[in-house]
Amino acid sequence: MAPMKQALVLLLSAIPVGNAFTVMSPTNLGVNNKITELELVKKVFIDGEAGTTGLQVRERLAERDDIEILTIPEDLRKDEATRKEYINKADAVILCLPDDASIKAASWVEPDNDNTVLIDASTAYRVDESWTYGFPELCEEQRNALQKSKRISNPGCYPTGFIGLTRPLVDAGILPPGTLTTVNAVSGYSGGGKALMQLYETDDCEPYGSYGFNMKHKHIPEMTKYSGLGKAPIFQPQVSNFAQGMIVNIPLHYSWLKEGTTGKDVHSTLAKHYEASKFVEVMPLGEDGVKDAGLLERDAFLRPDTLKNTNKMQLFVFHNDEVEQMVLSARLDNLGKGASGAAVQNMNIALGFDEVAGL
Image (cartoon, rainbow, N blue to C red):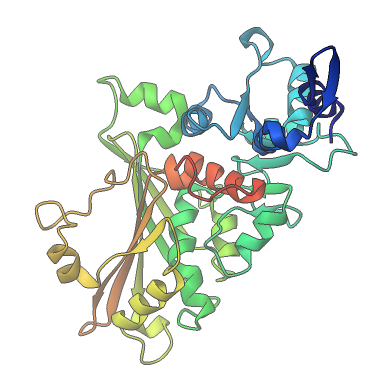
């Protein structure tokens, strides 16, 4: 027990009776319960809380009584000594910084600090073997690994959809490792941070734009590794004139899959993999099933912003067994399950909270 808590017990347990003091059991006064409550409150520091992801992380934590948010005074937010102090006194630190800044901040954890959990929202450590990849739904062992980890790399938004669709199929032997895939995806403009948000919130912006034409998008390494495919997909990201949300599409020919596989087989495999998930849901099979469930706008369009401000992800299997083709689709909030929501989910797991707390 920490010295301050020991002093609290002694102070509250010494109750005056007449001219003497009688030492009573702390349990009789509910002190043990109070101390338990104090021990359950965890200190969390968001390094980069003024950015897009940081603001949303803070919003998700603000109303919780099991979290104390450590906030640096505004005039010291860029002071390295102060940031280092806050990093080392926190139970969890969520790094919402560019890659180079995250690497530097992670180096400030003292060698003897075996308490602080670092959760990095940048791409700096996503394929680093010494960090745990923060997609709890990845496979059976992943959540257990996150419970024990002190270094967690938060997944990218596009990879969350791609990996969420492909990894269960690879593990089930339906989608062979080495399969060459294409990812067609569109995101809201908030994925580009404050600069792109400011641009799209003026009249001088494109209604839609494709990018990543050098085939070196920063999300490709984690897609390649954690999908289990071991081959980089051709990744075609796009940004459009809406703030939050995204759709990730993967077209597949049946000839690429395990012989005899149908759309129903793929759907059943995904449904089984995510049957216990609190945040990932497999939607009804095929275009007809999705239409019947009222999930297509105007009975035609899969809207990207439906899940904004949530930590949910919906998975779809649009198949045509006759022509032996299918499109797998993931819908999520690029700032939710694709960023800040995932960071809070990982923090909850690592600190022993209910996984859905604040989400």
